[in-house]
Length: 284
Image (spheres, rainbow, N blue to C red):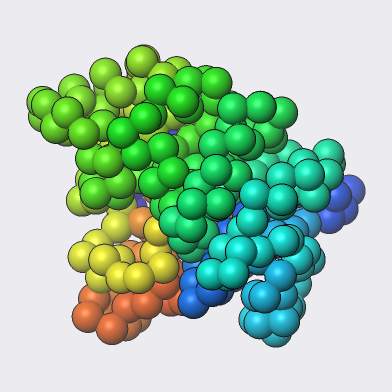
């Protein structure tokens, strides 16, 4: 087994649910409740003590049924079932006691949702965050708008999302990623075989993972893992690097039991504690 790039956060013996990481997940739209639930459950499976899941109000009942250990909060929604522009004020009220934010999985591309995401980033005041999926698509071709997140954010695009953020398409993967992250001052985790994590000065190439993880929802699980590590106090580069390793290791453990072809994101989610357990400190 390869060694993780950073130590897993230590949990003190006197820990309580409010002291080991409070995460806010903002995710989901009509037809995409699963992305929201996977992200929230992955944060819990990765050590977060309290996870709040904020969703369009039409999804409240289903996410309460699917995520027993998560606090669910309804937000104003559009006619199409996405987050409405009016969700900004209630969302900002939820930021107050959170140590990390996961923003984007399954949010859809409703124009109001896109406007909401842009306003949240432009006005600042966000907790350390993971920006993924439709959170990234809201900035397609205009990644410079993300510069205000410098030092506080991990972006987690797959190759298609990265191409939309950086449509120049110039250069090999690693140099292109370095130029992108150096310009914005954020950490970027570029998914794929041998996932790369770069913060403009350092680059980590992740050795864990397998082809079975090419399955719907696996990226949402990764977003939750990284958010939990941010909430535990890791900086974005460490959280993204260790998160990629843990996510891939969980996928490898699941594949050892189930093979590649039938692997699902739920299998990766369920294997996260098995990936983490050998890394935990059990001494006072």
